[in-house]
Amino acid sequence: AKLLGIDAVDAVVARCVRDVEAIDVHTHLLPPTHGNLLLWGIDELLTYHYLVAELFMVMPCVSEEDSVSVGDAAPSPDDFYGWPKPRQAELVFEELFVKRTPLSEACRGVVTTLSRLGRGEQLRAAVRLPSRPRLTALRDWFAAQDASDHLERVFRLSKLKYAGAGAAERRREPVNGASSHTSVPTVMTNIPFAPEEAEHWTASPQPPLTPRLKTALRVDPMLVGDWRGICSVLRRASPPHPLSMEGCVAYLKEWVRRIRPIYLMASTPAGFTYTPTAAGPAAAELLEGALLRVAMEEGLPLALKVGAVRGANPALQAGGDGVEVSRLDWLRTLCAGYPSVKFLVTVLSAVNQHELCVLARKFGNLHVYGCWWFCNNPSIIETTTRMRLEMLGTAFTCQHSDARARDSSSRPSGTAPAPSRRRLLRAQVLDQLVYKWAHSREAVTPVLAAQYRKLLEAGWPLSEADVERDVGLLFGGAYEEFLAK
Ligand code: RAT
Ligand code: ZN
Image (cartoon, rainbow, N blue to C red; front, side):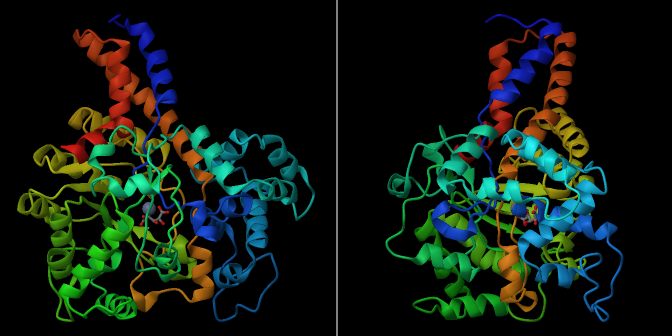
């Protein structure tokens, strides 16, 4: 193979990172067959909870008590969430894009997405309009798109992999998807505990699933130790399951059979440890007695997301979650105590990234993936990726998109949003794939190139094929290898 000189490295890395078909190991997308649970368009992009949080940083403070609507100028979060989406979007646009420069990562994301969808001129025209509504032309364009065609367009623009198998073939694959490692596509987040999603999976006959999307079983109530919420789900199931650990296991297994997930996934609540509490089977017991048991018996990896503080400011709903530096000692115990279970782990606090790398070096059953949410900013992606390359080589997955979340997954039943509010929270925004992947590729490229330059200077013969292979590993290949090993 032709060896690369130091001057050629930047261009080769840039090309490989630009062209690699990535695997998106965690998104909140759902198939077009789930009707209005797959969302796209300007109103969805602008009401992304990252942007709603930014809107309320600059809105005048209105207390909930005197929330007599002061009109559009200063809604309280509750007023705002009560508005129709287009009205919300217009306000976000006015405050963050017209009155201010959209410098933040989430704002820039909207600009990148629209430009790459060929809507740049309409965006610039919208900013020039003297008053609201400014977004009508963009709204009309999105409304004219067919859901499946748009999904294909977005996947092409984001350079995400195709999958070879449709639903029927998919059902014949081994549960952990190990045999399909030549073509694992985007992974969804499927929540049997969210009735509005569950109904789509229980309908019979099941419509074929787009080959672009793979399933993952999201079970946050297990780690929250939300026994009340779990019981109400077990009670409602048809046929109902016993309100016991056995009932939980049976319920999870039924869902494993139903959707054939690649992995089980849960985010840990703030301050998560193993310490059992007095009331009902606590998180630790549910983890051991149900989740790990199902993982072992079904041969499924367990994906954990660590460090979110749900409802730090509840008024902001999905935009109100925060971050904490987590203790990770329990993860060490898990990896050591359950060597036959594979753990896919990401952390929300930049402070936890180093400890997570060390853990991944110690345990072959731990795979680190992505720069999650508050870490999904170029500066943190750069620092984190540099550290991971230095500590893990290519044995990690550099990014996932998390394309728009809903949050009904994560809230304990007691704090579940009212149905009208839940409607606002469940959306996933397909178009976000475009900017999330474009910006991630942009951030990873110089970091990887710099690491190669150092290696060349140290005396290593590097070929273009090496770079191509490594980039493939970082953007999904290492994840597939981990699942298959
Ligand atoms: O990243 C997000 O948008 C969050 O709201 C969460 O949904 C998070 O990604 C999660 O999966 O819990
Ligand atoms: Zn997510």
